[in-house]
Amino acid sequence: MPEEVFWVDKIAREIVDREKTLNRGTKKFRCEMGLGASGIPHVGSAGDGVRSYVVYLALKKLGKDAEFIAYADDRDGLRKVPSGFPDSLDKEIGKPVSLIKDPFKCHSSFAEHIESILIDAFNKIGVKFNLKRAHLEYEKGTFDKEVIEVLTRAEEAGRIIEETTSSTKFRERLPFAPICKKCGSIITTHAYKFIPKDKKILYRCDDEFVGKNVNTGNEIVVKGCGYEDECGIRDGKLAWKVEFAARWRALKINYEAYGKDILESVRSNDKICKDILGYEPPVHSFYEMFTERGGKKISKSAGNVFTVQNWLKYASPESICLLYLKKLSKTRVVDADAIPAYEDEVDELARVYSGEVKIKIPTDLAHFKRLYEYMHFLSPPKNKPISVQYGVLANLMKLVHDPELVKQTLIKTGHIKGKLSGAQEKLLDEKLSNISNWVSDTVEDENIQINLTDTQKEALHKIAESLIKKDWKEDDLLQEIYTIGKELNLQSGDLFKAAYLTLLKSERGPRLAPLILAIGRKKVAEIFKKA
Image 1 (tube, helix red, strand yellow):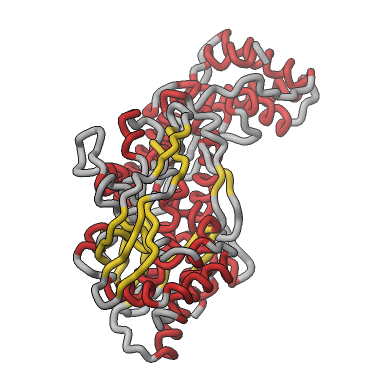
Image 2: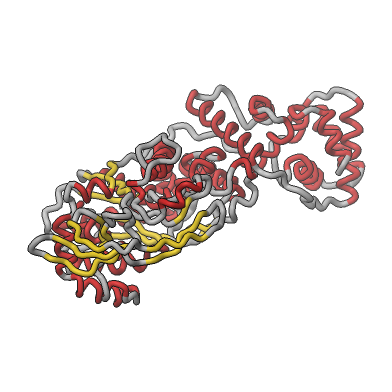
């Protein structure tokens, strides 16, 4: 099949073929993503979900019954007070996030407040899933069998963890974190014995770790309270080095993507899943992490954590899906500066998909088309959107400060031809609104060096003089620009390049004469005079 040149389709086919080989009677194929519940989700946090969601869609496309599960890790302990959260959370560090009250009182717990941010992001992108919360799954016994098997063979689990991660921690303790009955901490407890007959775990609350308040920068030393007791197998959680394996078997997971940050954990879980739990681990996709420049161009009022919501304030859902889907093995710097390039690439892929841009190599064409389809979750738009460079539109917005005036400029410059469909109108309005937000929230570029020759500058000054003298019709203005170029022996390409650089900080742009008239001849004259 030609579409199997794309990684998503290859993975889906691998999952189906492997299940046939394993012959374990799989009737429903399940993809999973982890949903962090202990810290503010940044733009990279949704990547796991989008990548797993498109594999789920590919399985459905193959005619398979499939389910996409989002698993919220809300039994993890709080290690840091996130940015923007009150200092009152200092005293909650170490406790399971599902048992911490929401300091803003808009959700039932701290965990649900954090989860809601990522759930909102997925809703905006269009990702649909079945949500499962760790604390509820433990409480109802979903992982009982897996917990018992892992703890019964804890010595073997500890050896596997050491072999795959070099950590000896679980050679000395059980890979389970009880919730202390006295102080409520899950990070300072130390499980040291499992009694299979009674399904009881003996523990001490005697560990120590250093947490942090991100707002104040203060380190917070959290010490165990010294309490010693026993707990049941539902009164805590498995350690990460074994918990994925338990989830995969209990929930019958067939696919999960993972990032470089949990590479070692996945290695240990794969082996524990197979050797201890007797379940073939899911197919994986490995992806590199995103790096941030701390929101270099985002103003303080817009915040320093670059979230999915930040991205979608400035760009389309398709552009963020492109970010997640195009090349999994490449590290990317993600911030507001990156957005124009991704938006332009979305437009370019739309032109490829419609046949406007020709790709000679068939496999490349199939790859680009399939990428475009998955960016739209297999429902690409019927009409090609209006294609104008993001940077050009942004600079137009800086000049006129009015999305409607930008739209009128696009009509005059010929970018909008004829009547737009309702869908095209909606997409264009959304794009201009996003660009308006981007222009408002990003810090102005300062000291941009535009290197024009003396002849180019003289030409712009002469055009400015002509613009001030009278009102112009489009054709007459264009002829005047050509005449000035000829008088100065300046190639028209070099003259137009100088004009676009001065107006739009780009070497190309919409048709120049209608652009000047749309912006306003007097305003353009002022800009050209300063060149």
